[in-house]
Length: 510
Image 1 (cartoon, helix red, strand yellow):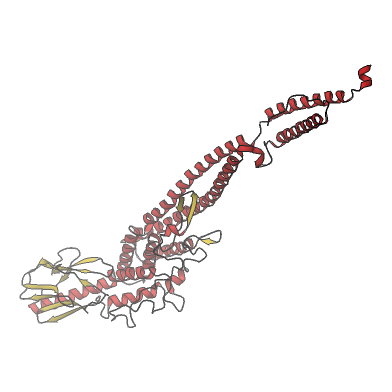
Image 2: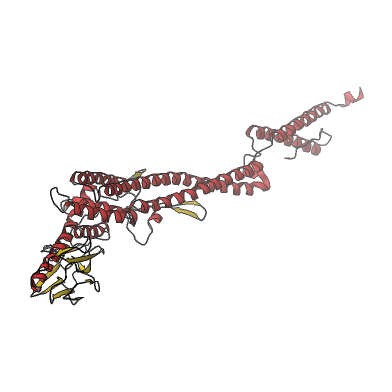
């Protein structure tokens, strides 16, 4: 503002008098404006009063508003990421605790320890379901884009069904029947003709049961000819042409439904290794062949009550927990299930859908929720309960809990060891604490990006505020000096003008 600092008394002439009057009014207006600047701290009450700087003021104000908007998003995002970090840590702790419980009891525990272990894992499974249904501000954390949909049904419904739809235990039971078969030999058959023992799969293309591994025959035994596995269905023939020697052994491999390969060894009279099954050398080749057949049946029956049950449970649990709203659970065709050789049409058998949230496989789980924290910078903070790390953790716990561990049965310990072994294996790989830790890392990296962006916005706002202050704020010391100078000038102008206005011819002649 240019402050008039010259005195302008009235002079003769109407035009000159009007000019001086306007200048006095202008000076008065300048004084009022300075007083307002001092009171408000602003150079002008309107953008127009800023002159050429009004465009810069509007631009910087807009940038400040944008920064404030991003800062608000960041504040909400920080809270959400902290909740996700805490939630995934909780899930990781639960799964790690279940794994530790199984490890402590596996291989050493008796029935009381097995019972205590199952109860503890059951509690952790139920808490995991509760955690997967966690909410923030009324919206579910693990439901993807459908944040108003409860993602996971309750633990009891998962395990036992809802009266109409089958739960996990029924799905696993049907699969076990299909894998075990009528004879309990894992859908394998044995036959004896004279001194020849034949071990075969029960049907061509049967997706259930134990399978022979081609080219897996090993060991050495006198007076026996082994052929196969070959044919349709695959079979192995053991033809005794004489009597084997004491301690000699033969072996072959089989695969279980979950893909695990087992080597089955059979030793004549004496065990060749700790895993071998012993059969007696009979008086004749035919009697010896009959003893081998009995040994094979015994070994397959034992596998059926331990390893095969666990394998069936694992594969059925994977199929169950792969189910979602748009992907019905695959079920065994039946009943009867123990002779089934096919799956039922997908979706034709009512089954509990454990995960009810968004399941669009074309969208990454993190990208189901995104927050733009700066121009061109967005972070992903979504989650789904059926992500591999969480789903496979549920598979491991669910499969373990769906097994029965009855007291007084010789196979109970084998069942526990087989089920816990597979559960631990899953929790050491695709599921479990380490896999969930990777999820936790996603949220941690997002949090670090949010923090650095927040700092950048704060710095930007300080800069913009400083620039706006230079443009819009008045210098009070300078304004006071101008006001004082203007008051002095105005008072002097008023005094001189007043005196001149009192001059007359009479006064002049005096």
